[in-house]
Length: 246
Image 1 (cartoon, rainbow, N blue to C red):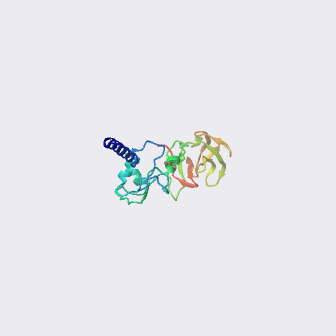
Image 2 (tube, rainbow, N blue to C red):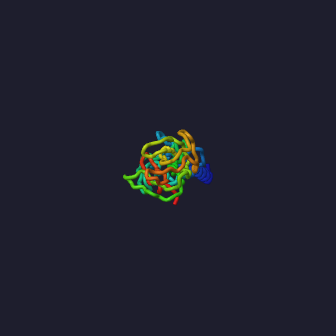
Image 3 (tube, one colour):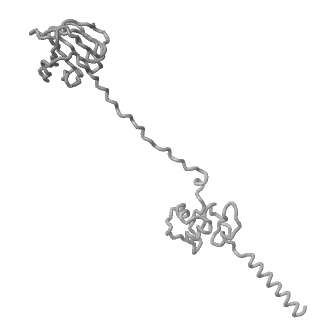
């Protein structure tokens, strides 16, 4: 073999060796062809053995930022998945999660149902019964708390005494202190009483309407034509003038 041919053969062998060496260079994750799941490497660059899927073992010189960039993740996500802060250092050999936790991909985060506080309607106070004058005339005796039970209204003998409000007659008879007397119940808390009649026009159990005649004016012990009118609320006498229109 001539010197020139030896030189050519030698150059060809050198070229093949160089090509072989270049083909054996380590491939880094960011240079690898896309695949369904990343290939995790150890410090030697070989496929990781004993490293769980979704994790990476830190190599010398690695930082959170470089690892996140290599795996196409955000640095804050890598830190969050591993309980670290953005400024936390990493050490060679440390095992880091570089893929989202499995539950974050497969388990939807339930959206809490909105909590509402039921709005309770404000209690409605019962409407006060509106009374009408049972007889139009002068007030001969006013109501005095603790001393009297009602008022005395003057009139003319035979004038009609009318129901102050709609209700039911619960008493129609004669009592010594009142003479011929009518008591009307308007609701569970309110009654009206009409005493000193000359005669009664209703009976016990009758339903009456406001303004309906229930008796006729009589005279008191002194011969004065009048009626005694009382209003009782929850069983207690109250001033009738506070319940009557002005």
